[in-house]
Length: 162
Image (cartoon, rainbow, N blue to C red; front, top):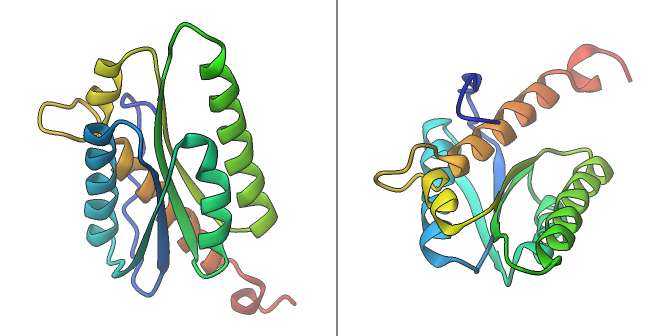
């Protein structure tokens, strides 16, 4: 989601179990993303939150898959900042494709909070910190809760279809 035109996704997430998988690179940015996700989950009524840290963005999909074994949804948070080598493209593509695959294989939401930025300032602007223009951690958490609620409300058990 971009900051402009973003939908309001506030949902009642009471009773949901949400996992948060966060990479360890770029501590200041990650602290903001995790805090934003926690704020949004709390505002949605989610009280059962498990945080797992992984070394970097490349490891987010496996961490998400692990948490989805016992969660209704996962929020994946990380940041990759462009450098002078193709590393940026490889890691961003692998993490993005991996998170999508995990979500589809598990049939559960993965909120996408992986920042892919040209420089550190872009990451700080999106980290939900004081002075940031966006809070991508909160947005990823809101998306995960909204989809988990939507899936729960349309499950075969609720609709009478088996």
